Amino acid sequence: MTDAPKNPFEMMLAQAHDMAKAFNPALENFSPSEAFKGFEAMWPTMPKEVMELMFGNTVNKDGLDARTRLLLTLAGLTCQGAQADTAVRQTVRHALEAGARKQEIVETIGQMSVFAGIPAMTRALNLAQEVMGDNGDDDK
Image (cartoon, rainbow, N blue to C red; front, side, top):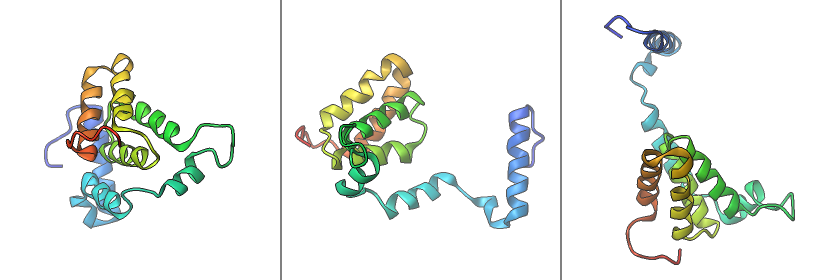
């Protein structure tokens, strides 16, 4: 960074940037958002069977299924301000694959406006819309 930091947060970022350059000079131009896009493209959606194994009721037969767990995850990501674009988009894709309807996804995000606020809800809805598209198909 060329300018002197003006507050403790900027100082911390400057130190982290300098440390990253010392570890690997190529990190000077590293863009986390670009790196996550590559990860997102590598495995955009897990098969439903994998989700049930990892997130569903495979271990706890009477527990929550993958669809419900993913809707809860989406609610949590929305409450965090929907700041993790990749995580929100992947969770929406996975929820659809696990059997959630678009209406359920929209309602899950909308319900979080009470807890997270309208800006967080709007951001999450915009990210979900990127995944779901606007084809008017309410069944899936």
